[in-house]
Length: 111
Image (tube, rainbow, N blue to C red; front, side, top):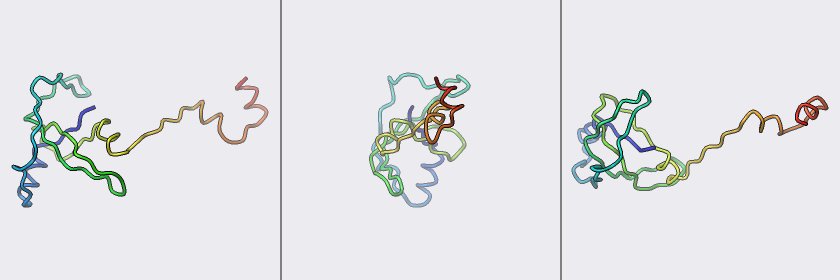
């Protein structure tokens, strides 16, 4: 999953005195189309690379697609999260059943 930065966030940063014109740009022409959860094709204004740091964690340069959406939510993609050292674990119901103390009924059910 890609990382997305609304242009409004860049505008707010510029207004606060950050030199957004000095950001490294990322070429997005020729990339595969991106679709939202409703299967609508998303359009992007361009791409930039930003220095991102996880509080109490790692720091890295992350590429973002810049969207023209009217919000201020930054979306970090799974690739960026991995680069930043963020990992998720999924525990299935079966895994939950097999951890901890088991009763005789649990042992029979799992046989």
